[in-house]
Image (cartoon, rainbow, N blue to C red):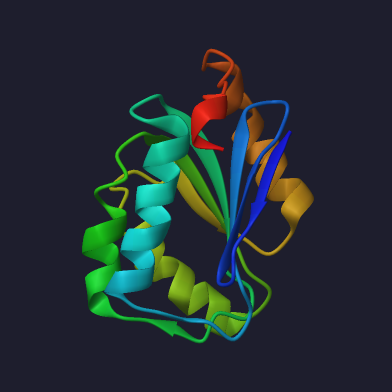
Length: 135
């Protein structure tokens, strides 16, 4: 397992190949922060395909530019957005619009359910290994 803690977000790569991105509570996400996150994700996985759990519980808001930046992270083939309330559900819809097909992107308020939904997507991928030189 790989885990990185940053001042505004955490990135974790589970042993099963699931990438978990946690945006910190109280955070307001703008284009600059979104670009930092996307750049770091590309550093870690390059163009290899990933399945992602995005935790957004407690994020305050995101600017409209964030969606455009997030769309540049093309390796993600399935996305579960995890929140814990109605405000998170509204914000999640913002991130879910990146995907046109709900078979590949959904909102959850229970992490176990989100992981269960992502599991078949993970099984379709080769095991994702991170290049140690970028860690």
